[in-house]
Length: 317
Image (cartoon, rainbow, N blue to C red; front, side, top):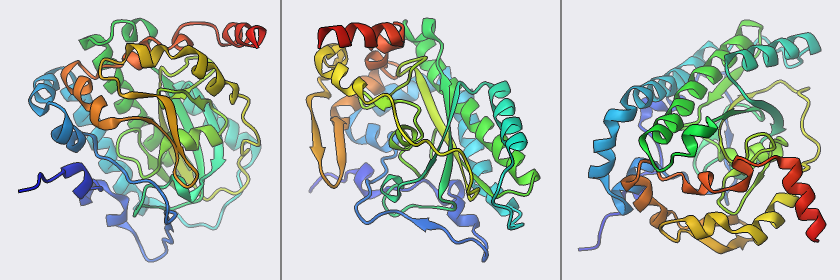
């Protein structure tokens, strides 16, 4: 009897964690592109390819943060019923500045803006609005240096949870001022957050498949709020393209991956974008070793000054 691969059979979260369960007649969601990528639910990937028992034993360390993140997913889903539909799709500079100040005060590291490419909406998923306010939150450097260890594991889930809280607060901020918004939490969102963040000008994907940012390298987690505000300061370019070339000459993440899960030569499909890792291999240390995180720990951008790395790289060219 062939093995049932749960992560291939089940692509969506439970109904009560999906905003589509709470749509109203006035909602007009945007569908994913026919060639969009599938979503993968991490617990099912671990069940298929990793060590579920080991992961369950680790729950005691991150149970509060995990439960909190799931609670915020539920709030994100239900709260779309509060969208005011006032017809207001233009934000003034003072209100936008107030929003950014508020987000930074909550713990956000950086903010970017983009129109969402429908290829980045997961296959068979939908989003309510076309534009995204994208947020990064840095993970503490000293805790990530300890990976794979419990402190780094807890730090990862701290950011998942806190980002969930923050995007819900930012969505409420917008609704209270007459704008429509839908939170996309760091866990359980409807969009592929890394390419959206690239389009928002926040960084570029490294060979480890993670977003490399200027201030913190890959030591960040991502979340977003989607909205129909039409005059956001959409990013027009991305100055981080050189990072991919740097990665080709670095390969620290490739050498330090305990599962050989990171492709030495990134696989690229014209219609599907780059594939950086073999997630079936990654699931093993991810589940056995406290979330692993070695591809973040050993990335030079996690600890070295961005401008210094860029200067050194350019001198070698």
